[in-house]
Image 1 (cartoon, rainbow, N blue to C red):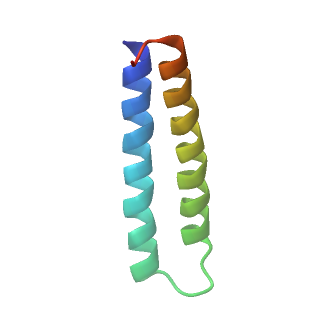
Image 2 (cartoon, helix red, strand yellow; image 1 turned 45 degrees about the horizontal axis):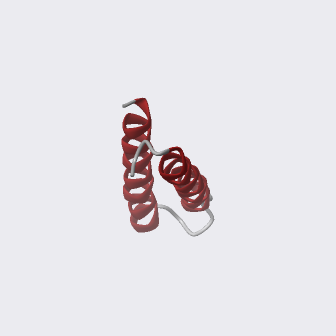
Length: 63
């Protein structure tokens, strides 16, 4: 149960990072680095999500 909750939280974090990145893209100046930081967070969260899914399937908790 805790694994499914953690996967959902990571996914929500990815969606929030995506929304923040879109806002930064539309409103920030070209010298702002917030869009890049948002992308870094999204990539890191995607890696964590893939690792959690792989762990879940290999341990039998998700499949």
